[in-house]
Image (tube, rainbow, N blue to C red; front, side, top):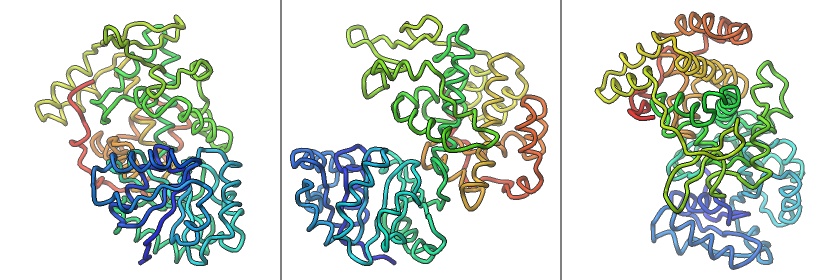
Length: 433
């Protein structure tokens, strides 16, 4: 197994950079250099890293440095982790600065959420085979998913050592994936989020954003509804991931990644979500009322508390531990809202399986990705509780178009899907909107 004693984090003042620093220092017990443009930012990053895990023992391991001190830190490091903004040229520029000082056997990693690992690796020339994508999810202390991305088949032996280190030392749920846009977790997660954003526009007469979040609430197997999730992540970050997939893929589901124009307009106004205190939602500081952006009116209004028969009955059954009854309510209800919900769950299942087959090394990775990266009820577990493969085929014929039917009726793909998920679906179905 790799012996990682010293780590340098580039861009340690960002949310991911500082939180990942804490993971290396706590679980990995490594000496960690937190490199930022200024010493002040690096000192603040150390404070934030400590606060993310609240373990005093890691403080001596966290060393703030600015970029003028980077040469000595890189020379000492067994692993260099770049956590800069999602900008290809920005990353390449810092790689050029550090390349001469990297030890021969050091591991080099980028935390990019979707940029090409192969393209980035070219900056390292003879050290390119030591370069990997190591994509963790935020906050990494709570979300353990770690996507390990290779760009060359010659990396396989070293990749096994890196995987063992990530899994056994850093306690990550490590999923090995191929170098494809947005990789696996974000490819599935932002597929679902963008489909929900599009549904909000299509249903703007019914209420739009808060309406769709009520239709796809926590009772469908998530800690927060999908559009609330987009606001939490940041509309600008969501846009970057969704646009990148749209621009760099050309499969049958490409249009699922076409971002609705109202999101661009919100971003242009600086309304990027929770971090800017206004996005799809905002809370009035004076009276604590929750507001939502109304797509039809092009203005904010008080958030509605929608009530639907199917969701109320599902929540009631979930609260009483009657999970099968809750699913039966959903399957039997033919209201507009229940049909939207069923269609979205079916799309989630089918797309997850479809993309895992192309991006991951086994279909079960889709369950790992969605549980440990998003805390969502995973696709194979959804397939299981809806009645299995045959039932999914039947429901797809009833509710979805030919593209979806063609995917799920593919025998070769169906044969790769496990009958049972390793995750207990009951942990994810919440008795609330």
